[in-house]
Image 1: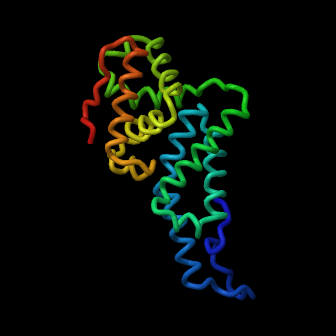
Image 2 (image 1 turned 90 degrees about the vertical axis):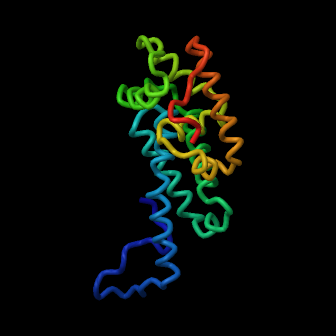
Length: 199
């Protein structure tokens, strides 16, 4: 994990280092808790767009390092989770732009498609349909792709997604509806319903 001032381990017995102050300790604990809560979302984003676990983990590590360096400032934002999501998106975009296209790992492909099979019941008739759907997800505009990843891959409530993205709930509903319409067109069907409803 990235080093963060105030988040290092306690000094060993007999060490000359001064023990951390309570504010430093609280800061480090807050950082650790924040990463534990939100890292699955950053990882889902990186994994979906990059396609392989090792590179996705590198990108998430870079996100955590950046957050560690400016953690006290991050806490001053109205929605720290939204700032972290933008940071994760920027790291992923930079990685995708800098790297040669890589073949998506089978396990990654299966995880993404598996998350959508509940929604696209009866619509994915072949591997070709699955490939089209995965490609269509990657081709969505950023705002729509974000809500699709958070809603379907992680199953998050739209209110939680709104907090992640720093958008009104109504905007998240709209983004999700337009994303489903785009994906349905790519699959050549009239509608891609959300069986669980727009929670």
